[in-house]
Each structure stands twice: as structure tokens, then as C-alpha cells.
Amino acid sequence: MDRIRVIREQDARGGLEMDDNVGTSGHVPVMLERVLELLGPALSGPEPVVVDANLGLGGHSEALLAAFPSLRLIGIDRDPFAIDFSTRRLAPYADRITLVHASSGDLAQVIAEAGHTTVDGVLFDLGVSSPQLDEAERGFAYSYDAPLDMRMDTEQELTAEVVVNTYPAADLVRILRDYGEERFAPRVAGLIVKERAKEPISSTKRLADIVRDAIPAATRRTGGNPAKRTFQALRIEVNAELSALEAALPAALDALALGGRVVVLSYHSLEDRLTKQALTARTKDTSPPGLPVPLPAHQPRFRLLTRGAELPGDEELARNPRAASARLRAAERIRVDD
Ligand SMILES: C[S@@+](CC[C@H](N)C(=O)[O-])C[C@H]1O[C@@H](n2cnc3c(N)ncnc32)[C@H](O)[C@@H]1O
Image 1 (cartoon, rainbow, N blue to C red):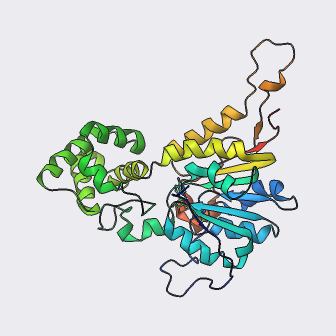
Image 2: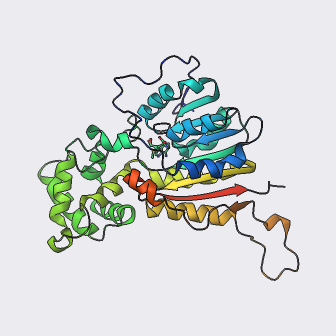
């Protein structure tokens, strides 16, 4: 597992330093109370284990560790800055945490390497973190001029610049349409290909200008910034976000002990659709129709804890506008495999 770096912070020295670029005061973990309420019943045993598959600034993790004094936590993030930051933030809990620089796509391997065969809870808080969006040089935001980067894992090779300047037009159209739900995908891709032939596109501002010029003027006047959809699409491609989730969610469900719970916070319809499909598939009775008695082997191993997707309340939205697109789904293991 050479891609996975395990950090065990055994000495509780440190805490957050004054010169950290990121403070935690403005950072509010999304739907925190609901997350604690949903995971709580699974974390009441003598030494429960939870995986935070999207550690970020460690906000949810810190609250979990504070709420459940015997909890052991495995925190995963593909962004090395998130691991470094959370290592310092969670230093008071150093003897109960294992923080791992990895993709959640490697969830099963991470759990095994941490020495567990099952876990009691898994939390996914998908998408980008506030510092990824707010630090201009990460290249995620169309509102700042910066190199076209968008890598969550700054150690990987693929950047948004590579995608924009080297992918064939047909692939750009597919990415913009499928991951950005951009209805003008062929026009945007066409202008990208034309412009990159003059000079490589290397900045967020130039890309945002190209997108704006490609979108018909009448459409530009409605909705938000036209670059939003293209930037989302490129971010998903660069970070292989959907394939990571496709691998991670089944692995999380497989790893849950009896009574274990998974909670997923997603931020766009593609993530939420994948989550809904993965949870629904495991909570259905798959007995062939017409049988007089249900077959045990076909009984669902999980039950849904949420009806549809739950949304943040008005009060949270007033405090934290970034929670606006959040959708929460959760499930519990009710049977183990025979
Ligand atoms: C919304 S933030 C999490 C915030 C966190 N819950 C908190 O309270 O501070 C999402 C984090 O997930 C990470 N991430 C996204 N996709 C990932 C993946 N496939 N594997 C591991 N981490 C991922 C990002 O780097 C980012 O730090």
C-alpha cells in the first residue's frame, strides 16, 4: 500500500498554530447534529470504531471524538494538507486516531491495515473542503485567477490543465455533459479546443472567460456564473470523484458490523444518485416474486435510516450558505452474511 501514508500522532504536542492559513472558526461541519444523532446508536459499544472517509478540516471527526469518549477514529483524506491540518487539530485525541493519506476508494485496504475486520460507522462528507475552494492557488475556483490545478491530492499527476489541453474534444464534451450537466457542452468544448490551439490554457481566469464566451448571451444573463458547471465537471474528472465513491460506498457497507451505520453527505446530484442507488440496492428484498415464504438469503442486510434525502434546515443555511446543496442519506446493517 505505498500510496497510503499512515500518520499516527502519538504525542499530543501542538494544537493549531497561529500561522495556519486555515482557521477553524469559520468552518462549520455540515449537518453536524444530524450526523451525530444518526451515528450515535452504532457507537455505544465498549470500543467502537468509526471511519471518517472525508476528513477535511476534521470538524466532524473532532465532534465525534468529543461526543464518544471511547471511540477510535480512522480519518482518510486524499489531500495531504487536510491530513496535516487535522493531525494538529485532533492532537488532543492522538491516542484514539489513525489518519491516513489515501483515497476513500482504498477504504477496505485502509480498514484492514488499521487492524480492523469490521467498523461501527462510516461517514462520507463528499466534495471539496473550504480551504480547497478558498485558497486561490489550488485552482478550484473560477472567482480567482490561478493555475488550472484542481487536484485534491497534490501528489497526483493529472491536473485540470492536462485535461483541458490534452483531452480529445469528444471526451471534453462527455465530461462537461455528464459531470457538469452543461447543456452547451459541445460549444464549450469546441471553443476550448480552438483556443488551446492558439496557446495552452493554463489559468482559471482564461478558462472562465472561454466558457463565458461559449455560452449564448441570453442564457448567460440567467443563473449563476456560467463557469460553475465546467469547473465542477473538471474537478470530478481530475479527482476521479465518482469512481472513488463507486468503490468506497460498497466497501463501507461491507465493512459494517451488525448495527453499524453509514452516513453520506453529498453535494451534487451525481453523488446523491450514486449514493441512493448503492443504498437502495442493499436495502431491498431480492426474493423472487411469488414465493410463499421469504428466503433468508434474499433478505436485505441493511435498512434505510432516512426517507429520501434529508436537507439542512433553514437555520443552518442562514449560518452556512455552503451547506445549501447538501443531501444526507444513511443506512444501518441489520443482518450479517450467513
Ligand atoms: C467537504 S470536505 C470534508 C470536511 C470535513 N467533514 C470537516 O468537517 O472538516 C471533503 C474532503 O474530502 C476529501 N476527499 C474528496 N474525495 C476524496 C476521496 N476520494 N478520498 C479521500 N478524500 C477525499 C477532500 O480532499 C476534502 O478534504
